[in-house]
Image (cartoon, rainbow, N blue to C red):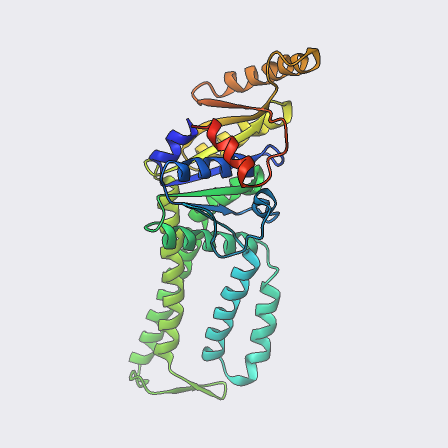
Length: 327
């Protein structure tokens, strides 16, 4: 089932409660697609990155080769925030007189820790990864953060698009007002104007603001369209056959459906195998109780069970062994 999805989709998101094995399952799926001849990019959006631990090698913010057909990277929101704030600071310096540079830098520094800055930066980086890798890779796999963070991330493109659209409209109103003032008698040429002791070109300033806003709107709108396109994008929820993961899965499923995100599969990881002694049999029976709740709450969702592995899944060989079970 997972390999079928990997063969038929362009973008796969793996999400679920923390500790259920999202990184392992997403990595095995990516590897299985690579084994089948595809070129795959595996991306971690979780601030507590685990790809490097799983493959037992350093993985950074730029794609690194894991094996033939499989590259991986770990998104660094902090790096994106610094790049974004540097661009904003540079633009504001061009718009403001030198005596206000200190205030501009202070405002930008405070913005670094503003609520939502981390999520917005992560979203922008995700949009860049998809756009840059869309033609180069057959499949892009996202290993996401725990449920609550991921649910907010999936609805954020819609919110950011609307917010940016509002800024653009307010910018257009300000531009029209400025044009009206110029028509009242001010020179409307492209000559420099003096504001607060500094000389800048008003038209260039307005063009720069609009350029930044339009670029961000395009990014967020395009990302939203990609996520909502069920022909090329799907979400897979990974869980354990335990009470809390099952309940959290049902809640995450509802949140994603409200955000128009297509959910193709529920992966129940670390299932207790049958015929493994009395203790594991009791565990398996308890799992069936919780999975009955899952099936009754989400009867339309397909389910794929992956049984508990005898050893930790670490390194390419171990992930490869798990990938073979998905074929």
